[in-house]
Image (tube, rainbow, N blue to C red; front, side, top):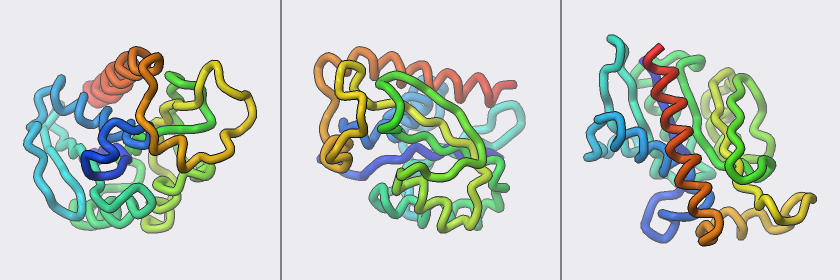
Length: 180
């Protein structure tokens, strides 16, 4: 069994913000790879399940707000008895340029509060992280001063084309990995 969690914030207010990139990728996986798009509300999350290659796959979007994502993830892990190494967390990454994707395992949160919440609740960090860059390509090279304000803004019109492509690419990477 695999648990694929996209991080974000619930509600229409946050729907198209940079911080909801994880939710957007989960939605893309659900639509394009025939998961039920009628997500079930359980464990403080919206989930959809499907069998791929004789393995149950759970897509999840925690509904706890970003900084408490670990509460929902911990409940699902405990209930479904999912090993930590079978968890994939998809999230925005302010330290990567817009459109970059990095996949890593067993790393710290690097300042991402949603990821830190998961590490704290699970007591482990040996899960896979798909980090999706949101740092402006033509912006300042130094760290963005007000990170919270930046991640809670919608993508600019210039960023939207790149984001649509990256959402599609990230979803395809996940599905390809699950089909192997």
